[in-house]
Length: 126
Figure 1 (tube, one colour):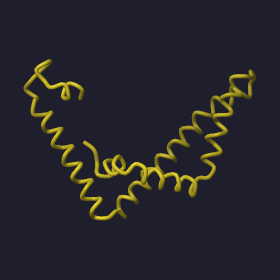
Figure 2 (figure 1 turned 90 degrees about the vertical axis):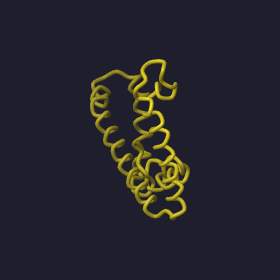
Figure 3 (figure 1 turned 90 degrees about the horizontal axis):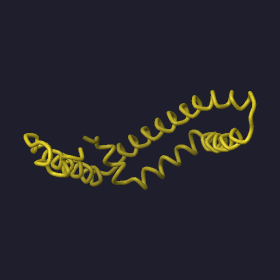
Figure 4 (figure 1 turned 135 degrees about the vertical axis):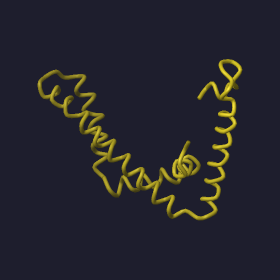
């Protein structure tokens, strides 16, 4: 089951992604430089051999993990803030979509007694 904020993000992806990009630029301008530098380093590592390149490979995964962690943290914070500031009309739309999702899941779960090919294709995919 999804949460309200996840459904909101799915429904208003363009709006949320725009806010996320603005937050990235505002909070961590070095993210772009690090991401671009790591791409360049990957190419140079493939072309050169030596002790320095092996050291870079060992430390690079840690820095990438930290970078991804920071990006995800910012994404969650921005989504939560955007959801908190949304109008009641948008909140109602998101809740209706969440209700529809629950109904679909309940319908699929209603076939619990059935096994194998007796189940619907949708329930077999879950």
